[in-house]
Image (cartoon, rainbow, N blue to C red; front, side, top):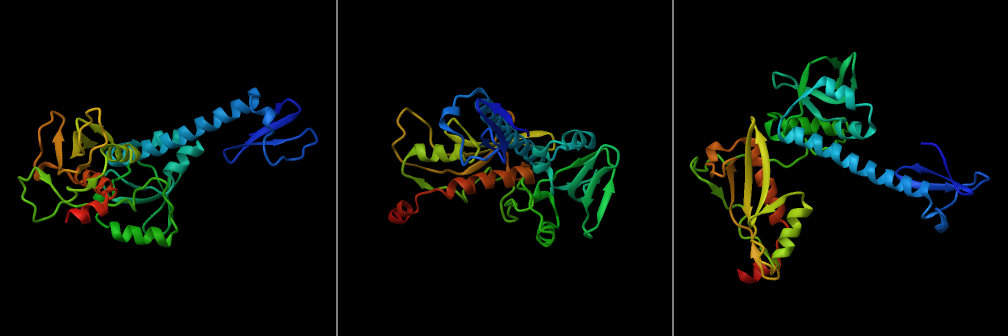
Length: 286
């Protein structure tokens, strides 16, 4: 982005920050205080804020494609790829074709030549599918091998995909079980701390539960873990409860009815909340 006049100075954006130079072209260490309210400076700072929000939104959208295993038209990827924020979000994600097989790590998108990938042999290839998927890692059968290969290639994903923690439903869990207590009993001194952790981790709270909505195979599922309900007084202690899943109507699902993505994402939420517990209080209670 070029320089913009601001009184006797010029300002510009560099690496997301407003920089300034004087009339002789000498760079200043900081933007003079008297320019704080200059329209050019205000405009650049507002642009920076918008770009930050845009980058976060792009990352969030790609993560939603992954969590929901949504089909993504190649035409859509070609349309957004010129945007640096979208490139940052999409670069090096693992994509699969219509047959579910891993196609490779995404490196380029061209409207005429299709997708540029690094395949599982380490070769750069071009493919031209109509749609691809950004699969959730729990659905990748060779996840450990893909992780090793990614390390060899020095892949640095901005969307947490390959190195996202995953949980599989235990083989010895009764198929008719409607909850698991792996992360129940995490003690928090004050209810507000646990509710704050829910928000900090990007989840929502409703009716005393932390919830994680997932759409899997076209069906809406919600993972829910008890955290305590607001009643106007948040200073009392609370603890995490069992984790369960419900369908769109609110019906409790059995373990056999919960898909692998919903299971993994629910356990991921529960584990993240439990990790913030007050360990000292638990030890004293024991």
